[in-house]
Length: 78
Image (tube, rainbow, N blue to C red; front, side, top):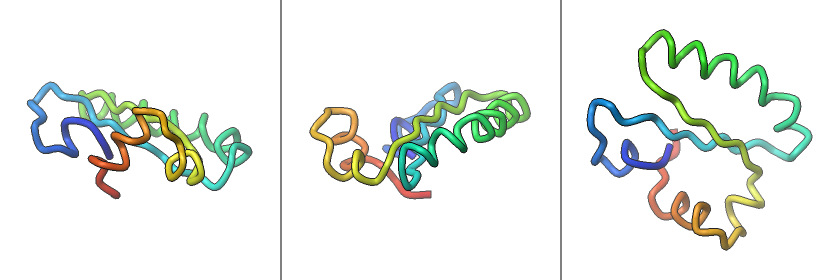
C-alpha cells in the first residue's frame, strides 16, 4: 500500500492505493482482470475507491521513475 493511507495522513474520503507485485508481465496479464473484478467489488461493498497498479519485482526494485522511488520510500507491505 502506498499514498496517504500508508503515510498515515489520509482523511475519510481518501482512496486506498495498492501496488500489486507479480512475478512477471505474463502473470500480470493473466491476473489483472480477475483482480480488477475483486477491486471493483471491494470498492462498491465498502463505498470507497481502491486504486490498484500492477508491476513486477524488477520494476519496483530497479526503476528510477519517481513513482517507484516514492513507493519504495513510503510503501507499506500488506
